[in-house]
Length: 165
Image (cartoon, rainbow, N blue to C red; front, side, top):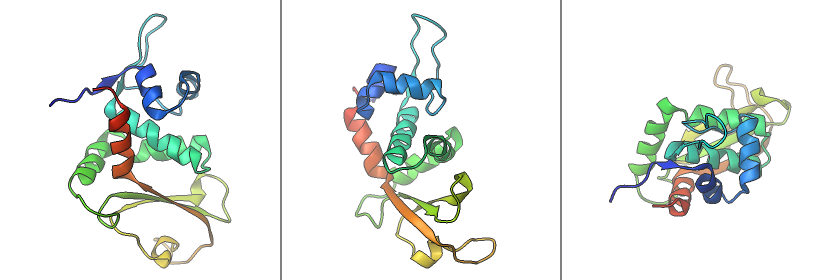
């Protein structure tokens, strides 16, 4: 069975569980974007499936307290066109428990309040606290404020279940 790969703004907002007005605001502020923007009144924006996944990741990060600007930047980095196929193939390539599924871990440093204080890791098994809180360049540990772990396979499956066929 072939799945649809293009969705309207209304279908995307419905799959995300948010009002269309909020989605339009996020689009206007450039936090989320469709593959094909609307070209004026009466035309539709077209969201590809990957755009909807990226918007769902953005929403998850915002729900966990990450600033919208940073959440947008982080979701765009992970789910940009060149990374998206790799991420989706990683999600599809392994079935099993949490230790085998692709996770996104976001770490917020306690001493830095801007985007540079956020670190993003994708992995299949939970690393140690020492691994996560050590700067790769200097091998120095830092004090962390919060960890967010998102099961990327579950995120994409939830969205797939809510998108129209």
